Amino acid sequence: MLAIYKREMRSYFTSPIGYIFLAIFLAVSGVIFSLTTLTQGNASDITMYFTYMLISFFVVLPLLTMKLFADEKRQRTETLLISAPISITSMVCAKFFAAFSMFLIGFSVSLLNLIPFFYFASGNPDLKTILGSLLGLVLIAAAFIAIGVMVSALTENQLVAALGTMMIILVFVMISIFNSSIESYFLRTVLSWISVLDRFTLLAVGRFDISAIVYFISLCFSFLFVTVRIYEKRRWA
Figure 1 (cartoon, rainbow, N blue to C red):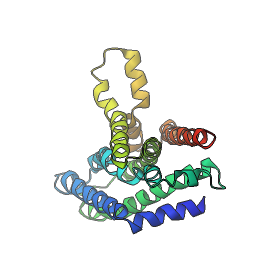
Figure 2: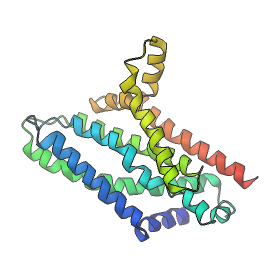
Figure 3: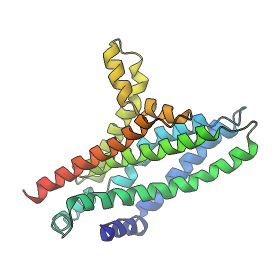
């Protein structure tokens, strides 16, 4: 597992993709922070920054995952990968953790945005809200990366993998936006339960809701489990 993890991390920095992701992620976070916080009258309110960062994930995170398995197919190295003396679960997890590590690198650097926020804040920032939002973003990113891992396992075209991941993430993000227009109370309840934005809101208001945390972790494990099943079927086909 460690060997595959190191190989994937190395590939991010020996190809343009890692640098492209970091440049886009940091540029997007900087622009969103400037527009939603520094230019607003109430500089102590940072909630919109975190919300727009969540929405931006549907564009930036597929850059990390589109090549993970699709590139193996394109280079015809997939057979060697699944026949290696390592479990499919370890292989999938290694690729997932490599992509998640790249996200954490970019995310950690983007936290420098909080320095001017605390300096220029016109009031006392709500630390529980900030910590809850940061936790929510990390958990959501893990779930979205797991989605990207699964989609990448289904195609050898990186562009298709990226677009497919974007579409699935967009559905999870947009559910709560269209939920209010649905007349059926039962359907609204079900959609609210699986809505990423609704779950994120629970954490963003400073409530460390266990159900929201479990939901994001379960979402992550579910898509990784599907990816493992895909490759187990291919290994024994």
